[in-house]
Image 1 (tube, rainbow, N blue to C red):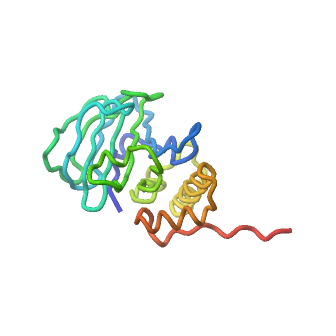
Image 2: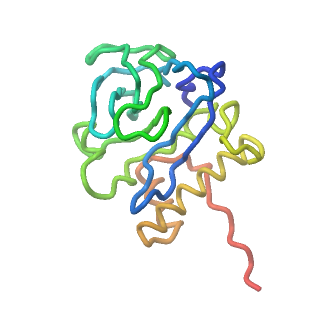
Image 3: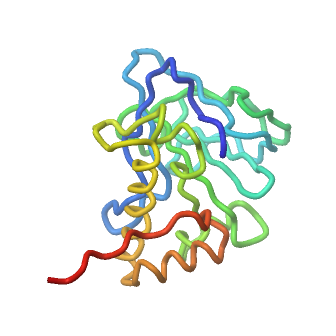
Length: 205
């Protein structure tokens, strides 16, 4: 499990998860804070800084390479790191903001395993869901000490299970696939822990 990208003193909440958005999939999750000041954003794990600057609709963004995957932090107000250096777990990488194509101040964070030789291959046209992880399942605090904004979603385990089920079924809806077929691909590509499984369908009447 990875560390939280934001301190709990900022009273962070999950404002959007990996679900259908328009004609596509929201490929990461959003974390907001009700406090007036822009909270600091931290590296979820040690790694190497492979991008730090403006990035497409993400505005100011940082991309980190970790041992087995990459993390992206988007819409930052400012960036505190430079490309090429190593970064420690929990080190500050920037400040939450609203740059790029953002609606309200928040952190957009993604986790992915590139299908090609470069991290940019994760953003090429095609089945991008086949290289995305769900941060709510990979970051211990999400769904636990960092809850959903609307609250009332049960225990940490229940919140993570709902996030997982919603994610898989959203992909299935967009791709017109059976949810189990989606899950099989995610498992094959090492994007989800085998412990997560879809709930059984209720018995027919």
